[in-house]
Length: 422
Image (cartoon, rainbow, N blue to C red):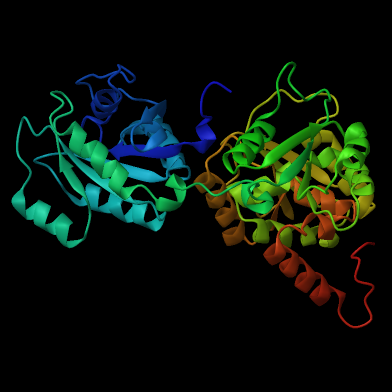
């Protein structure tokens, strides 16, 4: 990997009315002509993304949006695209003209606050007029950081950069570990990496690369093997590994080869914790026991890769779940940022590990499912559950394992067999 992927960057969304200088601000802070600038209102039609290294903040992704006060039928589509950006914004920038502030800006602040997004206010075009002192006092009283600047001249850009650093969410600057905290410095993890049709020629897939880097950053050792070489690799070690991590598609073989007492899990389950909410997605997997023939299930992928013949989301998971349920289920598939607002037709959402996204977007999607009352789970979690090995795959995660055991105990009830199978 030559560059930090988008999913591991702090996502900074730039919002405001039309023609307040959002695109000019993006160009000024990136020192590039990233976005088209015009005096004509509504020049920006779709979100414009610009990844960059914003030192000392690190890797970020700026998202320049269309004016959210856009008009007409086309304007409504632009506004809808802009509102989707809320779901993947870690830090919001609300741009207004230095001399103008009104109900629109107050409503935008309320909307950002409702999404739990910290915000930096930019009072642009300070070369044309100074901000109202009363407004500055009002914002200070509300503890809202405000920067007066001119995107055209560059005055105040350094103060803006500092405001971004000061207000970026701490948990996104200090990213959680993928697996390093489970292995520890000086300890070994074995990564089981099948080389199948979905593995890109000459490369590893992104979750594998990110996990390797995380382990190296944690001063842990990595040993990479294909699934048929795992047992021989284990026999050659003079001490057992601290953790075995497998591709979910090789779960059964790895479970058979890893000795009892050696924890193992999958890349997808690790990413359920890293990008989303493992506890919620473990609970969601239990909904598989309530599925019956004819129920609709939606399978969601963060990336939009071209599916292969034996695709994990379109072929393997539907096949395993159909076998588990003992009847035909109806599967719908979505990719990228597309996701239905109305989830009422679905009995379960199954999501990929979201390696292409930042954590906020995945958490937002999980929240959307919870609000709709539709359980959501993860590829690796549901695969392990359908294969009957989820309890073992959760051993590295005590809190998730406890949630699983408590839920299964409650589901078992008096006289139940407890395995959930039909």
